[in-house]
Amino acid sequence: MNLLILIALGQLVDAYFRWLAFSKTESLIIKRKIFIRSALWSVLSVFLYISLFKTFGINATTYKAALMLGWLPYFFICLREIPGLYKHIFVLGMGTICSMVQHTISAIIFLKFDLRNDYDIILMDAAGYLLLFVISLPALSKYFINLLPSCEFFDSSPMGIYIAILPFLIVSVNIFRIADDTLVHSDIERFSRIYLPVVFFFFYRYILLAAQNFYDLQRLERSKTALEEKLVALKEYNALSEENQKKISVMRHDLRHSYNLIYAMLENGDVEAAREHIRKQKEWLK
Image 1 (spheres, rainbow, N blue to C red):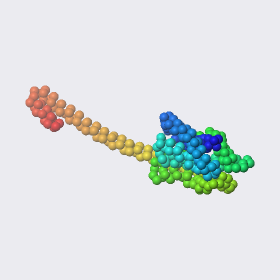
Image 2 (cartoon, rainbow, N blue to C red):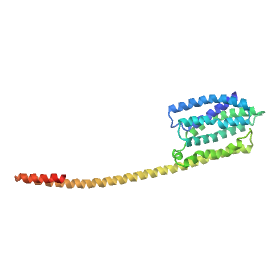
Image 3 (tube, rainbow, N blue to C red):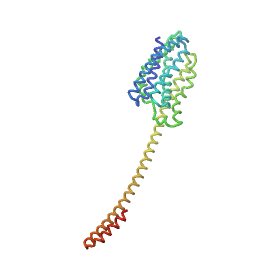
Image 4 (cartoon, one colour):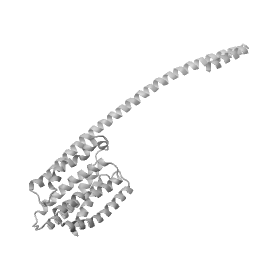
């Protein structure tokens, strides 16, 4: 029973770190829904693992099956509340890399103990894995909170899917190699499971910075284009305004001339001429 609880807690912790990648942008209501559903599934998974291990026994195959498939419910719980499949795939891949490194380090540690059977090895691995996550909680929390790159990475097609599956491509070879009935692998295999993810983390940071600079340049270009369009519009508005001012000036001159004529006609008592002039002005205004 202790082993099953440790496995369930380990998967819940995995889901928590993956959730942190979305925590900046989601509301408190969404957070509560995901937390409640994940906690309920964590409890339910204990009983499912009881059935699994009671039916097939506690061995490398059943333990790895629980680890490799246990993420699915948490993935869909989060995906249901937070849209964006590519982002979820990317975060899951990064979480898989982190989980693999933690399991490998845990295995290196428990191999120093005199473990005589599969159950002891599995129990020590599950406990060591959970302990390592607790110890690295501050660093991992900070990393996963700032994990997701700009949304432009995932909105563009087909680049979005390439970036989403990149972490899985990095660890795919290791995943296939450990999907067997062996609990303890060779030192070379364990080293590769640490070496490749660490190299990828540095590689990913470089890609992220380079791409961020690229998108910043794109945004600057768009801002420059928008400013140039505004400048052209202002120039056109200024030219139109000057043209209207000239027309208004001409109209004012014509009005002054017309008023002067009317005034002169009225001064001379030529009312009919003044009326005729006003009639022509009205016709012209039409």
